[in-house]
Image (cartoon, rainbow, N blue to C red; front, top):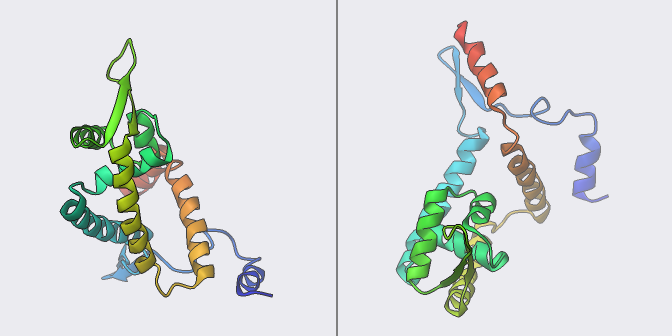
Length: 191
């Protein structure tokens, strides 16, 4: 039996999260709960993402003349060529303004081509041209090295478990309802 199977067997009676969570996202401070930055998941996601993005953006700007937002657009267009900006926003979770600015900058730098369809010329279909493909291939090597350094010393089974949980959380982000958040807010009104 491998480690992962043993872990599953020991957890069969445990409820899934959030009810079955082992750690608490809060700690007591002066008789009231406050966020515990050592266990509050949004903190870790933001902290890791912000640090990674800041470092990548600085390096990419210095060596390739584009920042992290442009890299995300380039990467998405390599994955799915000939797509509208709305598809980039949907998959990469960028806002429309940032996506539009990145597309314009990449086009001005000579990395993208597009075609505009009638009757709305604003709905352009974008793709990487040859220069864009070369840029993608160069940055990809750096991005993959950054990932290799990020996961250094992680147990392979733990990494795969982490990726499974991240996929679940990514799906759940889209399911967070305003109604449930309003209920949580309303519950504090009586205090």
